[in-house]
Image (cartoon, rainbow, N blue to C red):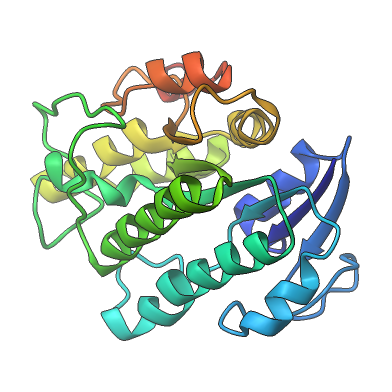
Length: 258
């Protein structure tokens, strides 16, 4: 398959390039990178986006403002407008599937310990499944909810296959350990450390999730699925990701931190 990846120079983008090396991959970046050969564009430029997707079968859309602390002005154009442009470019070029990088922050308010600290998690967290109501914890989370809705619309009205992949916190093992070392003795620090343990997505599991989202035979035109590792502390259900995408995570934050 011909697969285009926006945000290919980012952390998740780098894992996507590794995961999809068996395909003809076109990396799309915001700025030129010596080691990445592909179009450079701003996702708010709809015409340039459409030109970049000529001949593509799948779009993995990772580009956007990734900060949970961003204000509305910082996420509206790249995350909402940019995702609209992604789907319009996909529709114009007959792209079969869009894998959209959504986020745990689309539902984190279900279990946030302190609304002023989105990356915190209460001890008695309840399980959240992909079809539960969205509850964003930030303007960033709101932008992801809006973008998921755009994808669902294009699936229903234009026949594009859509995977809304709610990605957790991508870290290597050393970075995960640092989140625990920085917890401190206060409740806020422990709530953030708990969030990290629950949301951890190892690099290997990230690659597995993206490959599964690109290659799986989807049971319906639009699938929303969670992408975290098989952490003991997770609250995001992985049952649907396993059944609908064939995702088989191997790593667990509890085992890393033993």
